[in-house]
Image (cartoon, rainbow, N blue to C red; front, side, top):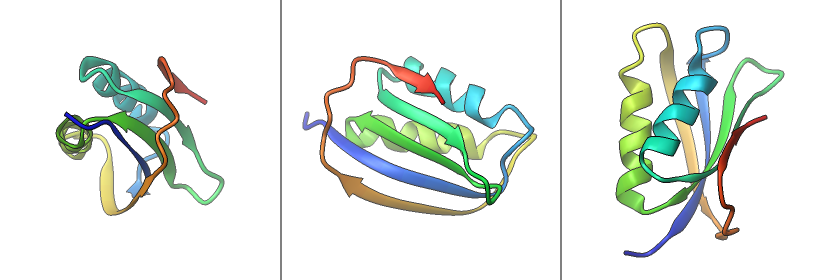
Length: 89
């Protein structure tokens, strides 16, 4: 399976609700590398690297978070960086 990398921004009520920790847990569960961080505008930014199916599964898990409210997701494919882990920034 081809490894890809996506730059993803989650908009909505996504800060102060454990969103980054849930993203990190899900990413590690699915074997993704990359990072996640809060942005000053209230959104959460993430870069995730792995298979398309695993990245989609992580996004799906985040959409099931009962404490967060994702209103919109912006996503684009970017070059693979071959990180070795997933971190919270």
